Image (tube, rainbow, N blue to C red; front, side, top):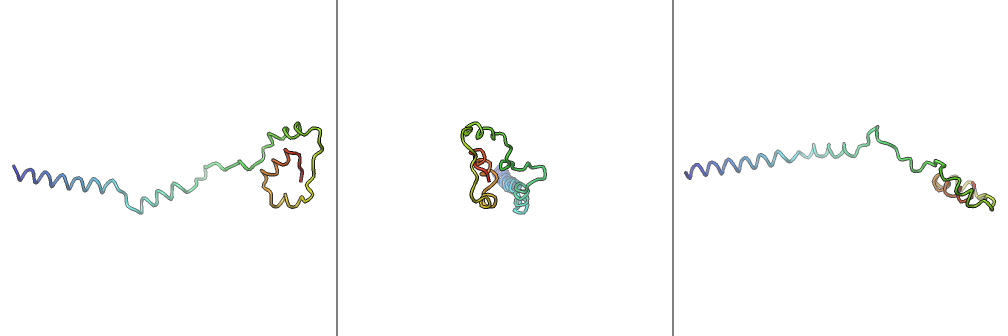
Length: 97
C-alpha cells in the first residue's frame, strides 16, 4: 500500500512538472508573438484627425459676420511652423495666412 502511494505521488509530481512547462512558451516564441502584435498591418486605418474636412467653416463666418477677415502679417511663419489643424482653427476664427 505504501509503495502504491509513493508511485502515485511520484507520477503526480512528474505530471505537474510537465503540465507547467507545457503552459509556458519559450522566450523566442513569446518575443515573436509580441513583435507581431505591435507591427502595423497594411489594413490598419490611418489617423485622419489632422486633416481638415471643412465641416465647421461656417461657424467662423456666422460668428464674425460683422468683422473683416484678418490677414496674418507674417504668412511664412504660419505656413512653416503651424500645423494644418491649427490653421483650420485660426481660419474659423477669421485669420487668413
